[in-house]
Image (cartoon, rainbow, N blue to C red; front, side, top):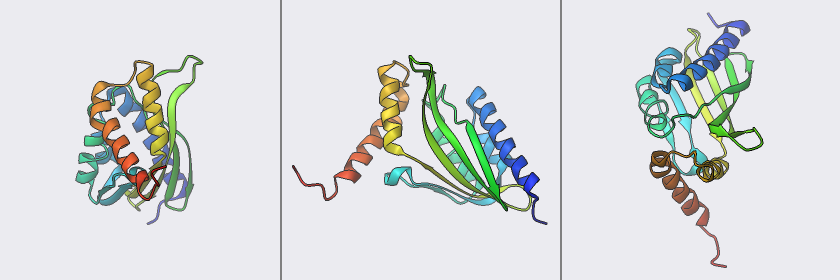
Length: 176
């Protein structure tokens, strides 16, 4: 039987609380077990530079909530600021929030959005994540300038992503 609007909203609320808990513990893999169907689909294009595509819970756990979230992301959080539902779908607005705060008290953060489909059993069957990768790279520069960027994150994620982004954008770009 399809979930009610209240049940779909409850899943969004539970996901928001899970993200808070995962950030506190710096452990993310358990979210895949708690929220995703065994056979599901996750997609994030990373601004066209790298495609993360998983089609099972185990693959999501190994990529998005595993490899992508392990070393260097300590002190980061991904709070869901707001969400809306429509039928069995959830749209979340969340933040890639780095450690610390700027001198003015604001967070080091960039926005993201997720489109999630919830199955009749309450488990997610599909998720598409989108965020501005160039803005994220600028944020990492700000964090490095503030002494808050993990050297491991810079080496393993920031530098490779910047190189991929630059190479992609240079296609058909005149020399001058």
